[in-house]
Structures are given as structure tokens and as C-alpha cells.
Image (cartoon, rainbow, N blue to C red; front, side, top):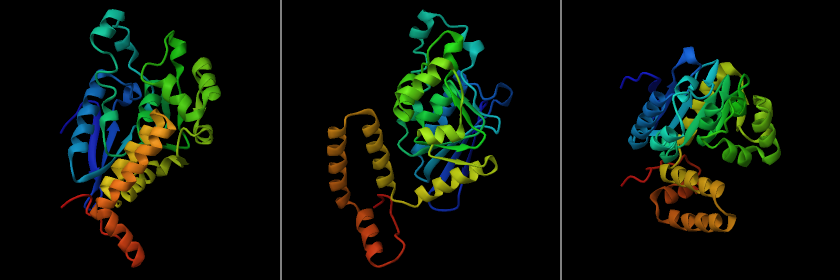
Length: 264
């Protein structure tokens, strides 16, 4: 399918492949518009429904993953229009409905909404050129897509307050040390690193992958006691799956597992 603001392709040769989505507004440094999010949501849901896709990688350009929201568009809003159109909630958060892992491959600027979008992914692999920040305070507003909520959970209250109140940018090394990104790689190898991570995940049991994602998100958003109980029940339930029996038998017999991914 042809889109105006994103590019899509499928990578890989195995039974389960990787969907690659590239934000594509280069002149605007991938500024996040309504059209972009409408298209992104459509592509994400289509790939999530495709049984041949195991993982999704979301990336931008060398200069910018996404440098923020589209400010000229935001200038057309007042309070009434923002509420009436369900601004942000309507289309920015479709990514949170995706059951498959979504990996953000970030190079260059990930600022404002760009940083928030990266944080909505399941984990972030950063190029050594990446810069993260929430500069909304410079515009006289606050973050609106989770910046004041996800950032403190990722990096702690003190560093989040620093970034949010001073609008300074955090480079890739600081972001890794703070826990915002999972790993930092040379910019030239960023996409390959993300695709290799996705390919590795694609080889594991699809039900196990989906349930791990669900449980970690429950841990991130809820309490410890409830989260551990949920994990325990899911662990018990996995003993009713073919993939559990195959994985353990393969381990005992020193062979590679042949997961069926929940297929009969």
C-alpha cells in the first residue's frame, strides 16, 4: 500500500518476517502530523493482524527519528477543538494496541512527540547520534502523549524533571545509562541491529513473545503483587501449549526447537 508520510516493507526469509515502518517526512524532520499517525496506525494494525509477521521495527531518518509534533498544525487548535477531536488519543496511541513487539530504531533527534512515540515502543535501540528530549516547555505547554508519565518511569523522577523543566537534550550514551534505551550502536549499523534483534525474536514461540510483552506492560503500569500473580498464572498456562513441550524437549535432547507458534 502507498502512503504519504510513511514507508513500509517486509524483511526476512523465514516463516515469520519483520515489518519495517519508516517515518517519511524528511523536509520536516519527520514532524508528527495527523496524517502520519493515521497512516502509522493503519500500517501497525495491518502488520499486527498478519500471521507471517513476528516483529515490527519503527525508524526514521539519519537526521531525525521524529523531531516533534507538527507545530503549524497545532497552532490551528484551541481548547474546544482539542477536546472535540480527541486530540492525540484519537490516533497517536494505536501503537499501544499492537500485540507484537515493536522496536524503535532511533537516530538523530527524538524530541517531544518523537521521544514519546519511541517510548510507546517495546524497546529502543539508539544510534550513537541519537538525541532525546521533551522541549514542550519552550512552547509554553506540557507534553501530551505521555512524556510526564513514561519518562519518569524510564529514567527516574530527578532526571525526568531535569529534562522536562530545562528542555535540554540527552545524548545516546546518557539515555542508555539512564535506562531509556536498551543499547547504543554506531549509526551505520542501527537498522541491521534492530532487524537482527527482530529476527531473533521471530524465532521464539509467538505466544510466549506476546505474553511476555503483555506481562511486562502490566508490570510497568500496575502494582507488583498483581503483576507477579498474573505472571504466575500465565506461566502455569504455558504448560498447556505445544511450544512449551517442544522447547523443553529440544533443550533436553540438545537440538534446535521447532516452534509452531500456537498453530494446530
